[in-house]
Amino acid sequence: MEKAFDQNPINRKKSGVKRYHIFQPADDDNFVIIDLEFKNLNEAKATQTALQNMWGKIEGSLIFNPKVLILKEIESSEV
Image 1 (cartoon, one colour):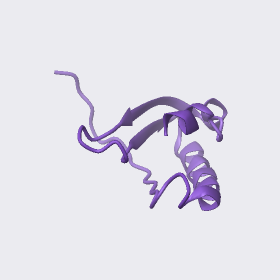
Image 2 (cartoon, rainbow, N blue to C red):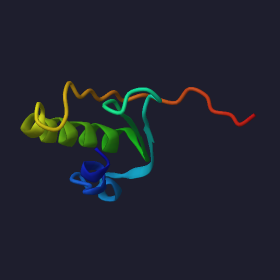
Image 3 (cartoon, helix red, strand yellow):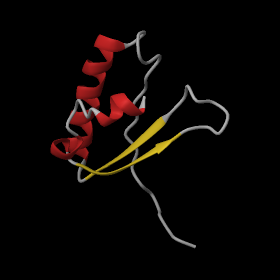
Image 4 (spheres, helix red, strand yellow):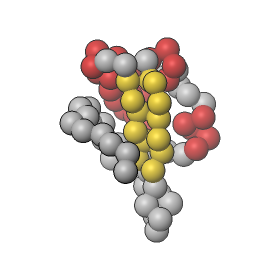
């Protein structure tokens, strides 16, 4: 997965990604969550479409049951 992500097929910077985080359950190396932060909603929607198009070509060989959600931040704080 890391190799595929590092290849950057959707050009994250050009797509408007400001920051990303990659999460993985401590007990499941086959599951990942990639959190992409965007400057605006339009860039997020365009990237959602690009990802879905890309996944349609590789699903079943490299990834299984990919999902994308666009979330809005309600609150953030450091403690």
